[in-house]
Each structure stands twice: as C-alpha cells, then as structure tokens.
Length: 349
Image 1 (cartoon, rainbow, N blue to C red):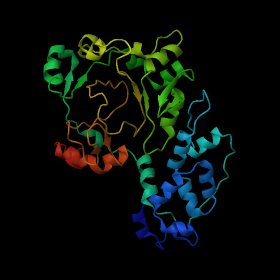
Image 2 (cartoon, helix red, strand yellow; image 1 turned 30 degrees about the vertical axis):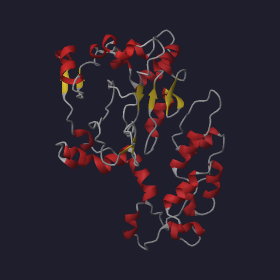
Image 3 (cartoon, rainbow, N blue to C red; image 1 turned 45 degrees about the vertical axis):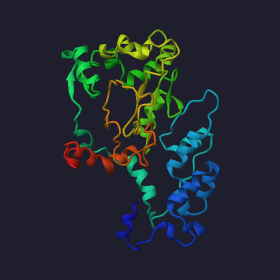
C-alpha cells in the first residue's frame, strides 16, 4: 500500500517495522533495498524471501523476477513465453520447478511503500480518457492532398500531420486481426520483443495478462523477411500494405543509397495497453511515417531543442533520459504539457 495510507492504519505500523523484519537492513530505505536485491539472481531472491514476511514482500517484486527472466540467456532456439501467473511463475516454469506452496502474509500489517506501490499502480490502473482526448496535430484527408501540397504544407516546414484514409484500403486493415495473425503464423514465426524472440500467440497472451509498469513492446525490423519465410503459400506481412505516394522511393533519399548502405527503415510495431516507446530523438535524425492499422496509439511530440518536463537531454541532444515510466510520466507531467498547448490541462489533456 502507498505510504500515505499508513496515516489511516489502525496501529500506524508497517510490516517492515515488525521486530526482526529486516534486521540491520531496516536502516536502509526501500529504494536501496530493491537495488541490493536487483544485484542478485533468482536463487538469491528465493533465499531472501524465506527470511521474513517483510523481506518476502520485497523479494517477490515482479520487477525483480522480470529482470531475472529477461537477463537470463535462453537455450538455443528457445523463445520467450510469459506465464499468466506473473514473471516469477514464468521463471519457475522455464526451470521446470514445481508450483510454490500457497503462503499468506497474514492480515496483521501491510507493507507500506511508495517504491513498491507505484510500479504496481502504474501496471494495473486504467488509462484516463483525458490522456487521449486532446489533439493538436492537424488531420487531413489523403484523398484531397496531392504530393506537391503535402511537401509544401508539411514536409518542408517539418510540420507533423495525420493523414486519414490511407490504411483503410490495405489488406492489412482486414487481415491484421489478432485471431487472423494467430492462425496465420502460430508458433512458426518469431518476432523481436524486448530483446527476445516471441511468437505472436505468446505475445498476444502476454499483452492480455501482464501487469508490468513498462510492458514489453514488439519492435521488429526483420518482420518482412521472417513473416515471408514462415507464411507458407501466403506472402509475408510486407505484402499487406503499400508505401503511400508521399513517401515513395523516388522521393526517399535513403532509397538512392547503394544496396546494403541504407539504414533500417521499416518496422512492425505492436503492443498492449500502457506499452510504447520511451521519449527519444530519432537516431538517424530523419522524418518518418507511421500507420496505425488497428487499435489506438498516442503520440506526443515536442519541437527540436524543447524537451518536455521530466525528460533530460544529453549534452549533444542526441538522446533523452526520463527517470519514470511512460504511465508515470503521463500521470505527473502530461496535464501541464497539454494545458500549455491549449488542451485545458487535466480535464482535456
């Protein structure tokens, strides 16, 4: 529970304050204790969880077990698969360990800690509708916008724009449903997810059941090749969409480079609720087009040299650092940004 709730507790005592709960470690704040625990592995976490009820709460943190699962090297050819029971269950199943016996911490005291509560809250709370209500990027119907007009109005001045009606006619609009993609690729095709390989069914299952503060995100630059190889008689995913005329090869300077010299230029991106890319500057300092085929995606853009609140640029401006997750950033900073742009703050931003 959050620290503020301790003020309303009957005896105003946290589980960590029980006699012998943390021993000499009680002198350390939870932030430091979690850093210490994160330096160990699964065996160390399991041992610590057996020492006291307070240490069990800390050592069973999902973030710690997620790190154990993602940092441990998988067997050759093994793909990442998430257990709906959580990351600790994922690790246990991967190692072939039996299910842990049911255990109760009792209801005598709760563990009050913002360090533990904040990630849980960010990973389970609903996304407020006001976060997606405000929009100040112009929407223009592609059917009435020529390439020349697009170049003059948006490309030359570097003005973001949402072009409507482009993706609705693609085969992807009808074929890229969860059910269809599960059936089309099954376990035959692996996609890049958080530095690991996952099948689409496993990834969809993860999206539906995880409570991560920062969920894993499918971001695959080889989707065209891998999906074509695994699709059998059906062509790969690249055949399901077409590059709009505004971005055709004859207008793409990168397309003029010799073979093998062009930087990566196309990705398949997918994610569940709360997932997304952190604040960043395009690594190639280029423009890009993105098509939202299914679901909704929120974009927040800032002008060059004007990083948003809570985000710190590097000395050369090439990278950005934010100490909080995406959900936490929206919760703390988004309303002020939307208000400054005319979105009405917390009510309309």
